[in-house]
Length: 85
Image 1 (tube, helix red, strand yellow):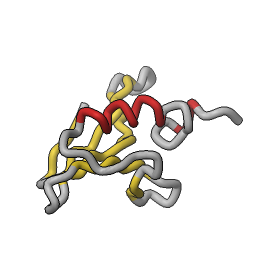
Image 2 (image 1 turned 45 degrees about the vertical axis):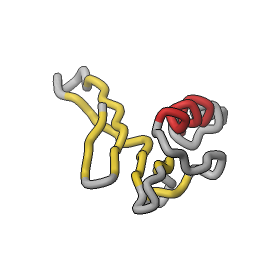
Image 3 (image 1 turned 90 degrees about the vertical axis):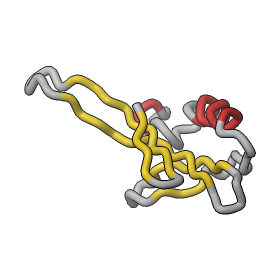
Image 4 (image 1 turned 30 degrees about the vertical axis):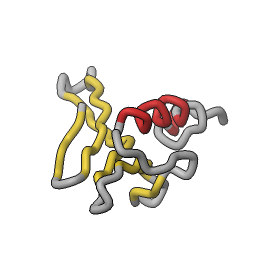
């Protein structure tokens, strides 16, 4: 799922909450379209602030950044609950 606001697309995970019957949402990544007409990938840091993903470079299209997002899933930047303890 995603949400748009201006030049920012926030990617959100949505999971069912079995106890309440509702749904819980958690943002995990942002794609930002800069004034330089380049897309950048951001992750949600521990402090609740968005930080540039360090293993990615700005791109003309957001598609290569989605590949970076897939590779970043293994590092724990985007999906902290999957990272090894």
